[in-house]
Amino acid sequence: MSAPGRGGLLVGLAAVASLALVFIYLAAGGASYEPAKVQDPCKPRPWRDPEGLEQLAEQFSLSALDGAACKLGVSRETLARALATPQSRERFLERYGIDNAELARAIRAGLLRAVDDAERAGALNPLLAAPLRATLRRIPLDQAIELVQDARSLLDNLQGFLGPAEGLLENLFR
Amino acid sequence: MSAPPRPRLAALAIAVGLVLADSSIVVLALPQIYRDLDTSVAGVTWVLVSFNLVMALAAVPAAHLARRFGPGRAAAVGLAIFAGAGVACGLSAELSTLIAARCVQALGGAAAVTAVLELLPASVGSERRAVAIWATAGATGAALGPAAGGLLTELVSWQSIFLIQAPVAIAAGIPLLAVARHEASTSIISTELRRTGRPHLLANAALALVSSAIAAALFLLVLLLIEGWRLSPIGAAIVVSAMPLAALLGSRVGPGAGSERARAAAGAILVAGGLGGLALLPSANVALTLPPQLLVGIGLALVLSALTETALLGRAPQAIHGGWTISARHAGVAIGLIVLTPVFTSDIARQRRDAIDAGTAVVLDARVDPLLKLQLAQRLEDRLEGERGKVPTIGPVFEPLPTDPGDREDVVTLREELQDQLDRAATHAFSPSFGVGALLGLLALIPIGLARRVEL
Image 1 (tube, one colour):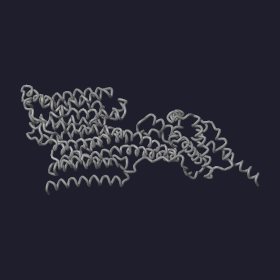
Image 2: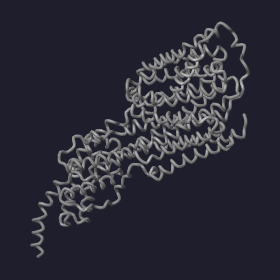
Image 3: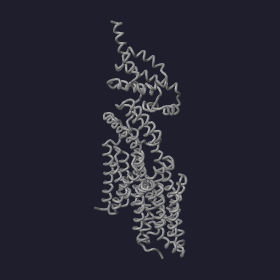
Image 4: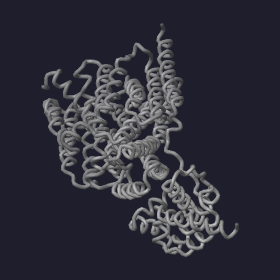
């Protein structure tokens, strides 16, 4: 083979090897290997069918986080980390230039959205939703944060209240 | 009159390899320097950039000095400066003194490397062979540098990288003392100065572009392995050894395989293809870096030797034209690093945020006990604060694992999902920079292609 022919072959082989590598890696998912995108907290998130109090509480907390994050204009994930400790909460307030009152308003709004979501999903009796909303509108910040982090105690108390209340209503409207 | 040819030839090759290894030898030590000297990624990059920038600026003036005062003397003095500055680098306790010492080291290195090119033809009896040895020694040094630096960092310390260079440089300089003494006893050098021909602009432009691409491959891959995938320096050194091994394979492709231009074009395409592969890694798996490294290694051997030969052969004086190639290569490395550093530091910051959000989403949506979630979120937040600015190590967040087998399985699954998100973020953070590197490699094809029609 002539010298130009050998040179052309060398360049051709280099191009084929390079393109083959790029296409193989593309086919293996190289263009989409990136972290999962977080969901917009303002968009409704479907409730998984809760089984028992624990899962109901979890769904309630996640809905509350979404609602509060939507109100503050941050991601649900950012807010969850901010509420992890008093120090992380302080850092969050400083970073986003908001105060405790604004945070409290956002978390209360989040809890109200969780009540709406729970009611819509059929997980919360509509008779209890109205008094619950009234309570949540006045709840202090620290208690609101505790509820977002673990709503089990709230829902436990509600379930304890639900049995007699349903019985009372049934008697009244019979 | 002078040292016997064989030890002197070895000394000359070692001098070139040692100095040119220095442009990349600290790559694997950068994460350690970054932590020890408490600086930023952008700051620590200047340990590399400063050396390459000064080499680029000093190579041609140093070559003129070597011609005026004698290459033997210039090489011996250059190696002595290189050794002394290396000791100063090793003793530096602050980033500013380390960078200053690196600049001085580059001045000595520039004098030594360009002077050696003037001495080599007398030792090997042929200009073509001298150029081939000079180019091979340089490419080998540059390719072996990161692995050697990684081993020293892990086994001893990052300071040892510089301290160990001093005795090697002095040993390489000893056989040159006889040449220097001979030059001192005669005055033939200053009267033999010839008119300097024009440098080969297109070959040097291609060298600059392809060198910036190769710097991207080495520098970014090492950072990905150590900072992104959490490999130890020695582990990363073993992984990136694939590149010099492939370069050895590439160096066996001689002129018989095609003209200098064909080899240069093939090499540039392979470097670009390898970087393209690194930009599209489909998972955080060390084995997947090997095919791209193979392409980059073979490519760099082909393109560097072909372009250096094109730039030097038939051009006199050799030291000056060698100075231009050194200048082009190191300018390429420095510009590549200066261009790429802001790209990947901003990408790392953005991907870190995305990884943390994605990881938090995994924790929130996981089917584990809400109280355990809360504890994990708290520990994760502490970890993130403790490792501010880096991709965090999340293993300790999950310790101790729950004793209940069911909970334990859920938490292990959660840990794996979280680690997957961090790996995705770390890998993805480097993709745009590898992509820019691939583009630089492809751009080198323009001057290589133009050189086909334009004879300078």
